[in-house]
Image 1 (cartoon, rainbow, N blue to C red):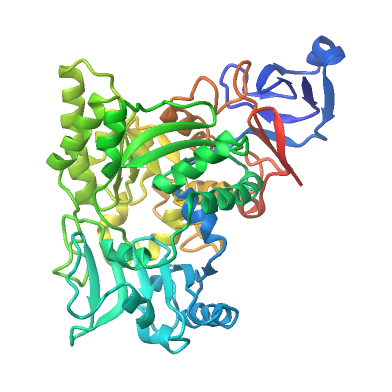
Image 2: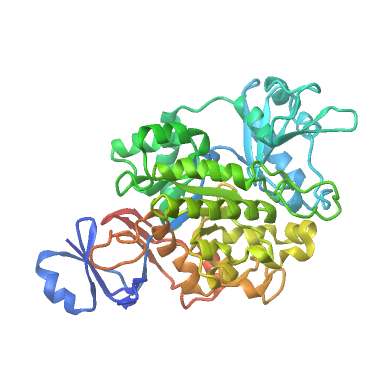
Length: 531
């Protein structure tokens, strides 16, 4: 038994929101209160003086690609302010890599480059060929909806001028029909398929190492959106006793028949690894301008993005999942994509009622722009809004450039909360940093670190208070996972997942959140990280 005392504890439990002493018995909270607990439990417990530091429940990233993030720590970081700097970093890695070996990177975002890409112009294979054609080079975009390849990588992937565009994807070509090196949506998968495949053991080791990064950031749980190899790696880590994050594992829709045949249900598993939802992609993303929109992108009259499936097709997936007890989670960014999935969810809710099936905890991922007529439908249908605050500060200028006046309901957290939707916040890492404090700052300020775009923030009507934003990293994800009885707050009987901070996010200036991280992180009553 442990007693953490002399602490400033925000329990996020409305029955006792603040305390100074926490008693932990094995993996759970035994009691929370004041100094009187020292007398009640002191003879049976070890004491740890917190020195007046702040304690919060452990934070959860409700949308993260754990395999991509963990492996990405080994790749070239090409999230740079200029294309020239991205190319310099690639050249540096090439110089350290034997000829013939792949050079992989992640993070480029052409909309943010200040050198020659002010109109969102894509880079080309020629840019990378100038560095090396002796190495295949493939760099995934920050959005994870595009890839940039050199000619050697294109050749190894079998991409030629005669290659057809895959369904729901595009091989970008120049005016003479030659591939430019940019692969959008499912075309990116063609390039990735040519790269060396990681085994589940490789991924397990990468995740085991990445856990330390996540604990330092204050994360004790994640909702993962990667695929079968990641699930196998997580099971391996759990079996070996090395998984020290609470993971909700969402499964891709192509595995729905197998999951249904096996009888898997949402919530199956234990307190470290459990089945979440079935994941469907409705559309693309803002960065490559493939998010499905009702009206065209500004200055691109023929481009309304890519709609992968409509509401009817989504309902068919949802019906099959619901019959097996599997909830649905849907990537939908553009206003048309969000509309189509809401239509599908409306049908699905009716189907659940008519067939006396449970009303499962379905969710929409991103909801980056919503039509005014649809703004209240998530709350009405009890659909969780799984959103990423840091996307707003990253994407605001691109959103203004491509969506114009429609941006009023972009990244509209306040609107969703006011309409009664549960918010579950994440990062979409490695699309963004998984640092939840950066997400908290974005949620309460809607400003970039440099103060852009204005002192009041971008679309300030959509800002949240700190308690609201913290709930979206704690109680919101816990509810989404069906873990609300044991996670997201600190109260007797809940799992002892917590973080210790040198500063208090409730009282500090929002700018101080930028440098905030956990001084110590506990999962299940065990200190897994201490600075």
